[in-house]
Length: 141
Image 1 (tube, rainbow, N blue to C red):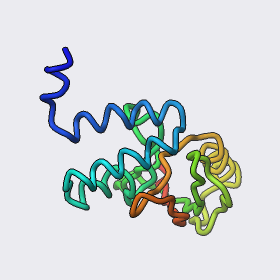
Image 2 (cartoon, one colour; image 1 turned 180 degrees about the vertical axis):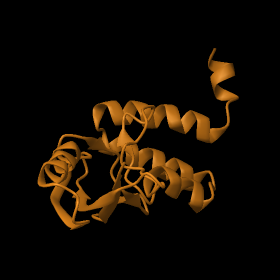
Image 3 (tube, helix red, strand yellow; image 1 turned 30 degrees about the vertical axis):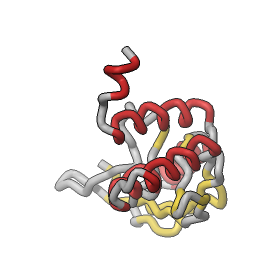
């Protein structure tokens, strides 16, 4: 089974390591995986997809990410929330930065609570933690 696992493409093997790091919020493993990808000459866009995506990666990654929200004809408005991620994947400095007039206070509070109690993969660039301000626009349907 080791030979079979070793024959998998590098990104497939790395994703297994990332899933384990996600479970433990193991920042050191994130850094090690990032360094391995750089060492193996992985294109930067592939590394960024894992460690610096445009929308924060909600954990566990095998579940749908409710923060990836598309505007549809049924959308009645939106709530836009800004926050930062620490090295353990917890959101800090969470605040509503914009919302349509029909977004109720209750809907805004629920979204802020969802972010506060969720875990995310931390942002890394150059193998180091990046305190990037994430802005998520959640469409109301």
